[in-house]
Every structure is written in C-alpha cells, then in structure tokens.
Image (cartoon, rainbow, N blue to C red; front, side):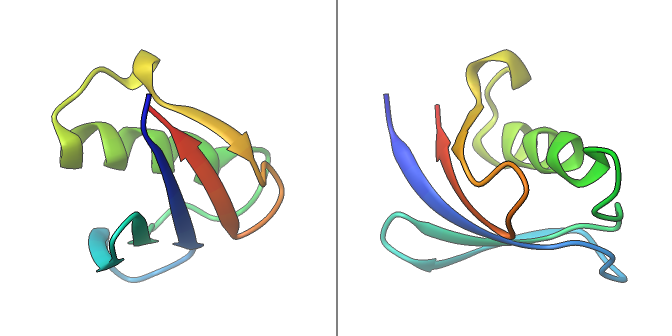
Length: 72
C-alpha cells in the first residue's frame, strides 16, 4: 500500500494531476464539491493517472476536506 497527500481543487476549468513533491499531488477537477461528486471524480482521475483500477484507491482521510490522504 502506498499513501499520498492530495490537494483537491474542485470546480476547475480543466482536469489534471500535478506532482508537487514526493508523495504529494494537486488534482484539478471539473466536478463540484457537492454530494461526493468531487471524491468520485478524484478517484477516477487518480485511477487514470496511475493506470490502476478505481477499486484499489481509497480515501483514508479528508472525505469532506480539500486535503486528503489517499491509499492505493
């Protein structure tokens, strides 16, 4: 299992994943932070970025925060 600190920017004009430091990512999402839409979009974006199944990604901390700990 690998842990990663992720800063989420919901409501962005584009979707992209940027590596900001070792073990840290900033993820820009079009989805709004409403009813878990941004969390679902985050998991989908990270699955594409790392080329792994969505089911292997888990938000372990920060479900309602823009700063999250992701485990995969």
